[in-house]
Image 1 (cartoon, rainbow, N blue to C red):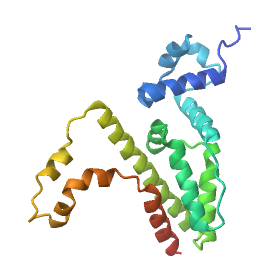
Image 2 (cartoon, rainbow, N blue to C red; image 1 turned 90 degrees about the vertical axis):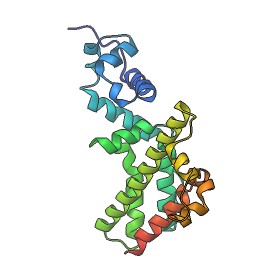
Image 3 (cartoon, rainbow, N blue to C red; image 1 turned 60 degrees about the horizontal axis):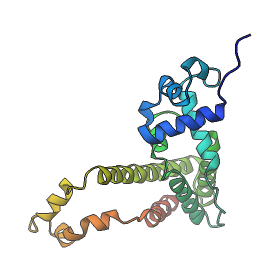
Length: 211
């Protein structure tokens, strides 16, 4: 009989979470994880098969800790509430959005959110197939919002110089772009406003109206 594994699965998952939060998913390898936890890659294989299984464990761990809000009776309100909970739950872990949009990975613990969005869409009159399409559109909007905001925050943290967009709007040709010129001096603060819930409601209402 060999020596028992030195680390618990919970310790391994916690260490992996620290790596992806600080360095990104691409830097998460069994060798890098072994250095983080103070062991060898072989010791880790007692608990996890490979990087994919490790990422699934991370997804499950985070999904199980995400809040599950009280659900309104109205289907549209319910969709907005659940989708906003997804966004709020992932806002501080942008690496999860990177994993979910780049790989064919799904946390079973996260299906609670998917189920309630699809169920609300069916209750509002969509077929099950159209309800899945509605969920997909809502997820794409939510993931896109998180990706854009994360990238913008990272850029501002790394570089305080004006962006190329700011330079373009500062010297906009009013004759060629009259509508943009009217808001050019306010473009940055306007596009920086958090209008997610309002836009989400409009998107969801339009999707449900198709039923």
